[in-house]
Image 1 (tube, rainbow, N blue to C red):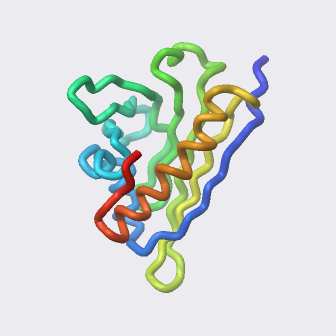
Image 2 (cartoon, rainbow, N blue to C red):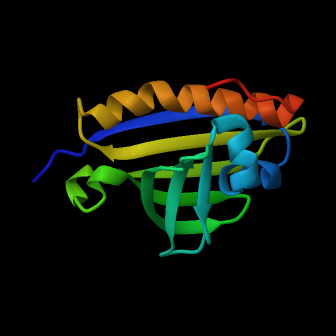
Length: 148
């Protein structure tokens, strides 16, 4: 059995609403503006989702299934590189917890777990999530994301 004990947790506070955070994650048009990728799905439990590079080539880079959704509060999905999507040992899980905080802030906790320790995926998300979530925060607060 593959060791999938590694995890990554990132917490940030964003001056916005829970609805706008959820929309930023699930709307292809918005995700493209701060991530350079589109997250495409019906966003219902069991639905497939695809993480697509937002350019003319539109290659699918990451895929998975929606596990749980509670709009504006929680989203859980599996996460696999498109090239290894058929290998359950390569699948991990991402959970977005969205909570209203004080002073008009939203607390966003992203937990990426069920990762293989030392894997390329673990190393990649350790760099990727802080960049993406910082860009999302900038976008939601100022209207401008970062160039990723």
